[in-house]
Image (cartoon, rainbow, N blue to C red; front, side, top):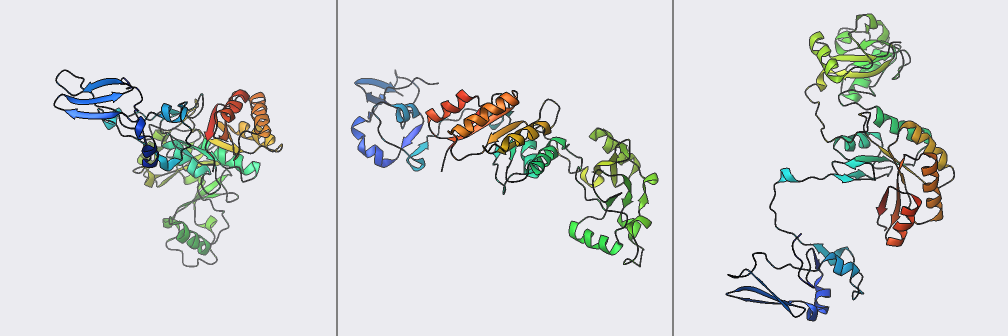
Length: 371
């Protein structure tokens, strides 16, 4: 940090209306052949002259003076203050954006997606976590649905399709044609009950159905490539190994199945060129993506906390417009008693006293801002 000039600031410029009310307190600037002379608090500092310093004077006022100055009695809003730019003496490659979300969770990219039902469910949480942030699954759903959204994030593995569209063996080819037109792709795994996680019976691709003319009566099970003829990989399998199998077998899709033959994932040949490396991904100690979930402060939310903890959620956010309430404080204490290692973010608050109440209750992070 550079030495600070008394009564002058380093970061913040004040709106012109406020500056006009306090011009008599501003430092006086005089320029001449000996550089810039600043007169402040009856002290003189010389910059830029032959025998003077090499730095330039600061503009604006410091954040400490504005927000904590004993003489300041002015309330400011967003439009009243701007952050002053400074001199850049580093490159983009030197910038580190790592920030702590909570006491224990560090993000390489300080972006958190909001716990709103129009913003964050599993797809958004996965996308944000892969880029180094974290997503917070909203609470406007049943406990079971929220747990399932959390588990989708925790189960995600880059390059694996964990929720492929499956079909049953009794589907008509005419129905399959409609599904293909809707989805935009032509190959589907065929499972016992037409859903993910059940026994894999085969795969149906465009080559299996191209020359079938009676599509209104022919069923998928009669034309699909049966399980016995498929190239598969056992669960668990590393992505590199799965990609090698696809390359050597020259197959379009590689089902990943359990020892009981149940389908748990799919790897597609078309994804090989599109797979990206995500070095900044936010992961836990088990190499799974990290995810948060929101809860309320109702008594029923205590059961939600237990279910989310069992699902492996990494952080819980108590979603409330006014965080300094007895209900939130009780919920924080409950979570810390029930799940001592769980990271908890409280809020929202806007004052130091509100923040202190949450800190005293045991939160690991605070949401700031109302309105």
